[in-house]
Structure formats: C-alpha cells, structure tokens
Image 1 (cartoon, rainbow, N blue to C red):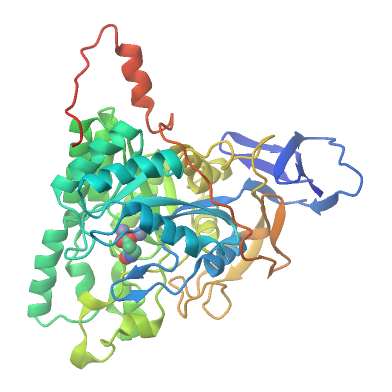
Image 2 (image 1 turned 135 degrees about the vertical axis):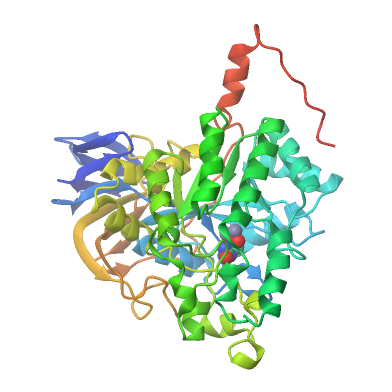
Length: 490
Ligand code: URP
Ligand code: ZN
Ligand code: ZN
C-alpha cells in the first residue's frame, strides 16, 4: 500500500519546504514536488497543514508497578493516546526491583509491551549493583538493543541508588558506549524534609513540593554531572524542572561536557499553585517528582529550551487514577503526601501544548518544535535517521499537523486511561489531523484506528555519535593529548 501526502509544508529540524511525501510500505520513499504515486495509492490532503515527523516521547512509564500500585495506562492504551496527539514512538523504562535481574526485568517489560500500538524502546534502570548487574548491562547492550541506563537519585528505600552504585554503573556504561540518565533529586534530603514537613502537621499534597525544593534537584543534578565529568561519560538529565538544575547543565555544557537536558511539557506550563487547591483529589492529581515549580522557573525552562540547554521534551507519562492517588489517604484523618503515588499523564497533549505555548507564542519555530519533539531525542538515543525526520528511507512515522485545529483538553474526552487531566480546560490550537506509524494510519478524522501489537520494539545501538562525540574528539586528539586511563568498572 502506498500513500502520498500532498500539498503540505514538510518540516524537519533542518527547515521547512512545500513538498509531497510518498510512503511505500512502512517507509518514506520520496520527498519532493511533482512526485508520481504508484497506481492505487491513497492520497492524503495536507493542504494548509504541516507534515512533521511523529513525536518521540523519551520518558514514559506504562503499566509501571510503583509506590504500591500499578500505573493505569497500559502499553496499548498509552501508545494509542500518544497517536491521537501525534506521538509515534515512546522510550519507556524497565525498572527492576533491587536484587532483580536486569535482563529478567527487561523480558518482563517486553512481554507487557507486545500490545503496543506504536513503536517503543526501553531505557533500563540500574537500581542496585553486583557482578550480575555489570554482566546484564553488557547483555542488554549487545543482545537487546538497549543503549541507555537510568539512575534514580531519589525514592529512598525503594529504587534510589547511592553514589557508589552510580559510579560503578557510569563506568560500566562508558565501557559499553551506553548513555547514562539520571532522575536528579537528593533522595536523602527529600526523606528528611518529608519527615520534617509531615511532623509540622502539613500532611496533604501541599507538603509534596515543600519536601522537594529546587535546591534538592540542583544538588543531585550537579553531583551527577560532576561524577560524569570525572569519569568522562555523557549524561542525560531527565525532567529538569527548575533553573537551579538547568544552570548546572548550562555550566557543564559551557565547559565542553556532553550533558543533555530533558524538560517535561507540564513543567513549562503548569505552576506550583496546583498544590494549594482545596480539593484534595485535584491537588493530589498533580503530585509528581520533581514537583511543579513557580512561574520564574517556568520562564527559565522556556529560555533553556529555546537556547539549547534543554534539548528534548517528554511527558514522564505515569498515570494514577483518583482512587490510586487516594491510596487510603483521601480523607484528612489519614492524609500523608508521602504515600501519594508520584506521577502525571500527558502523552496525548505534549505536542499540542508545545505547539500552542511554544510555536504560537513565537518561542519556537516549527523546525525547532520538530527538533525538541522528535529529532533531538532520535539523535541522542541513536534512532536517527530511521526516526525523527522525514527523508527517503526513514520510517513513515508522520503527522499531518493542523496548525488551526483547536481543542479543549479534558479527561472527559481524552484517550488516556486516567480519570484526570493535568491540562483540564486548557484550549490548544495546533493538533494532529492524521498520524501514521510506519505507513499505517493510527489517527484520522478524530478517530483512533490503532491495533494492539502494531508497535515494534526498536533497537538502539551503543556508541551513538551524538552522545559519544567525545570518543571522536579523543581519537582526534590522541597523537597530541595525554589519554587518562580510568580503572575498570569492577
Ligand atoms: O513522579 C514521577 N515522575 N513519577 C514517575 C517516576 C519518575 O520519577 O520518573
Ligand atoms: Zn523521575
Ligand atoms: Zn519518570
């Protein structure tokens, strides 16, 4: 089956031009004007619209077992909702329990994901350390296409790692050419502050941000960055939520270090007043880590995204319905903000929220929008040019983006499997009109046509040029420079 997308403006990270796109089978066959489509091709009219690469969300948690419950969105419902919003690939997280084999956990997550409606890949979290973890990291990179490992510096007594584990894992990742990522919050400080806030009698959701101030995030971001600097490994900081942490990234970048920053769409447009809502459920629906911040931080994050300090946008899509958020704490007598499952949704809304608040306000050009919603992620995590662009040979993950289509976001109408929406009532202009995943229509005329199992697992090889450019620099410098040899990771 061939498809020709006619009359649109094709936007890539490099620029935009009026062109048609010919899709044959699962791939883009040609981009240009006056293309001949094979007989029997379907024509999609993109007149007045942009034609953009499908969004890639590098940070999701479908059906994650977390804080005593399981995230409500599964791989089918989540990738379907993603498609409705113009996202065609996710990178989710395998999070082994401490002492659980990384490879076994990976296989478990792969099993859950077989129902995905769009393509997916996995980061794997290192939540503990011994020789078997070291060996599993190699198995995952060599045999299972994993090229990124996640480290939680928070969630004490659960999945948090100390500096010893962080260092062992960073060193191992370097040997393998994999990318280290961190959830940067000082978990020890969070633990103490939670106790202090709770003991003062602040037990509701408003206690959550008080226990996780920006300094707690900045300390961890800076520590991870400096550890990465000493070890000479590239680093990716997930969900950067405040100027303090962003400053640490900016400083490292200005010193020539390979550090990438991710920002969540919700941190750009929602502020911390949500925790003052007198409706416990509404405030609890916003409990996520790092928490929502003040407007000054939002403004700084936008500038960071515009200026390239932050290169990717994600959702950290991790949904919990109201009964889950209550978790026995929904009435004042037993309220304990420490027990509210952390997480919010938004996979369906990321692209339109960023278009509306980013492109329509003039903060981002359409090309910059494409860069921060797909291309940069594809490059950093090494799936470019298969994903994150529209070019001959790339997967036909394509969105016909209608810049004039308006919708008001609501849990009543969204496709996400969660009973609240953090953007409830926000009207956004700029939405996906048609979404294609490897040439198959997943969303059209306001209707989903997704099918469980259409999504494919995407291998991501190590030694990504984008992340490991320093390898190239080191090689170039070899005849002149002194090469510092690090001890092995054992
Ligand atoms: O609150 C959040 N972000 N929940 C999901 C787990 C994580 O920290 O990424
Ligand atoms: Zn996190
Ligand atoms: Zn997360």
